Image (cartoon, rainbow, N blue to C red; front, side, top):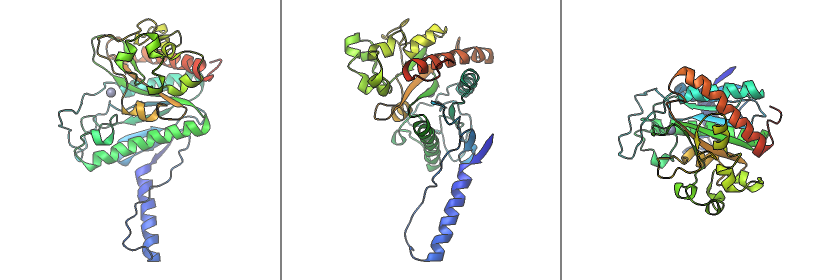
Length: 317
Ligand SMILES: [Zn+2]
C-alpha cells in the first residue's frame, strides 16, 4: 500500500512555483496560492498535514465511498476546543473501526475495495459535517483541516464519477438515542417521513438519493420504506433500522436525517453519486469489538443488495 503525504507534496509544488516567479520577475506583488492538481491513484493512502485526515483510495471500479468524520481523538494544540453553544462535540465512538470493518467485508464479498475518508481529530476541535461557516472553529488550522477532509471526499467522489459513472457515499455516524436501531438519513424531513406514501412520493427532489429515484421503477416512498429500501435491507440482515418496511416512520422519536456531507456529496443538487447517512446505535451494534465484527458484514450485505437492486452493480456477488 502506497502512502503519500499531500501536505508535503503541496509544499514542494508551492516552493517550486515561488522559485519560478522570483526568476521571471514578471509578477511581483501578485499574491497567488496555486493549489496542486492531484489525480488520486487507486489503492493508495493519502494523508493531510500532520496525518490528521486520511484518504484510502479503493479500486478504480469501486462505486462505494465510506467516511468516518466524528470518531477522532487527536487534540492538536493549534485547534482549540469549540465552545459555541451550538457546537456539538460528542464523539461517535468506534465508528472508524466500524467503517474499516465494513470496507473489509465489502472487499471480501465483492473483490472491490471501497474508498475511505477518515478524520482523526476530535470533533470538539474540527467539525467536518457542517458548512465551514457553521463549524465555530477556533483557528485557521482547524479550517485548513476541514478543507483537507473535503478535498479528500471530493476527490473520492470524482474518482467514482470518472471510473464508474454512478455510486453511493455512506457517511458513518453514531447516535445515543434510546432506540437501538440505525437511523437511515436521506435529508428527508421527519414530517415527510411521518406522512402518507402520497406525500412522501413528492419529496424525492429534496433527498440525497434523488438520482436513484429518477431511474428507479420504485416510487420514492418505496425507496424509503419498501421492500428494497436501505433500511429494509439492513433489517433483513438483523440490523434494526428506521425508516424501513419493518419500522416505517420515526414518529416522535429522535432521528437524524443527514448532515452537510450527505447534502454535499449526494445527488440532491446534481450528479449520479447518491448519499445516505447511517446513524448507528451503540448497544447491539458497535459497543465492543465482537459486536463490530458481527455488525460490519451485515451492513456490507445490505450495501451489496442495494447496489444490485438500484444500480445494477455487484450482480452475482
Ligand atoms: Zn456523527
